Structures are given as C-alpha cells and as structure tokens.
Amino acid sequence: CQLKVAPYSYDWIDNGGRRSPRSLTPGTEKLEVGQEFLVFRLVEFESNRHITGVVQPRFERVFGWLAVSYLVEPRDTDRCRLVSCIDVALPTSVLGKVRQTLLAYGDLFMMRKQLLTLKHCAEQSAEGHTNS
Image (cartoon, rainbow, N blue to C red; front, side, top):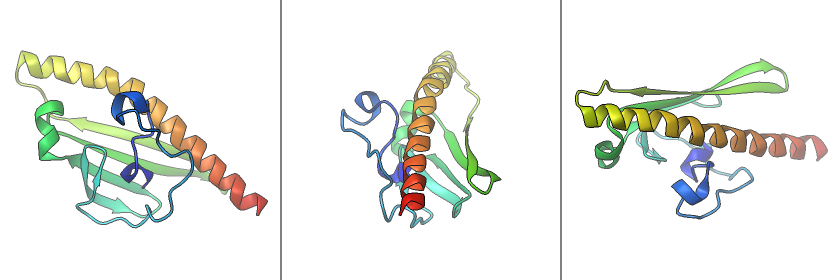
C-alpha cells in the first residue's frame, strides 16, 4: 500500500529527488481498484496479501505493456516474505527488445532497493508496536 505514496527505491532517479518516507504512512491501506501507484493502475488486491497493477496508458509508450504484483507470504507469527513479479509483453521490434532488456536490468537494481526500503519501514513499524 505504501507504493501509493512513493517508489521507495533510489529517489534521485525515480522520485524527482524527493525522499520517500522512511516510516509507514497511515491511510495508505485503503485500496480501491483503479487507484494509481508508481506507473501502474490497481486492478486487483487482497488486503494484507497482494496487490496487482497494470501500466497506465500514459506510461505504456515508455515501458511497454507490463503488469506487476506484490505478494506477502507469511513465514511464521512474526515474519513474512515480500515477493514481486513483473509480467511484460513480448517485444516485436528491435527497439522493444532493447527496452525490455533495459527494463529488466533497471528493475533488478531499482526493485531490490525498493524491497529493502519497504522491509526497513515494516521492521520499524513492528518494533514500534512491540515497544508500545
């Protein structure tokens, strides 16, 4: 849900230099199909379990068609795993193949940072709940 607020990766690259919040933002858990997050439009979700979005038409020219899902997999009572998956359309042109390759490597770099930052925010939130 926090992805409605900011990208949480390398802010100087994909957030116009504005720092993503380093604590969870209240109210972001209120999801509705059609909401925008990052370059996606929310198409499906299950609270506290997963969100799935498809690229917004205004970004499709840059990124091509793609969809993304974030899934929380519980591990035990106080641990979970956050998994992300991107589905892209098969490129039909040389330019499309180059774009897809750049997107794959760029996402590997950016999404790793994003997931680590979200992990840090969640851990801070959990510590705050156990200390209060």
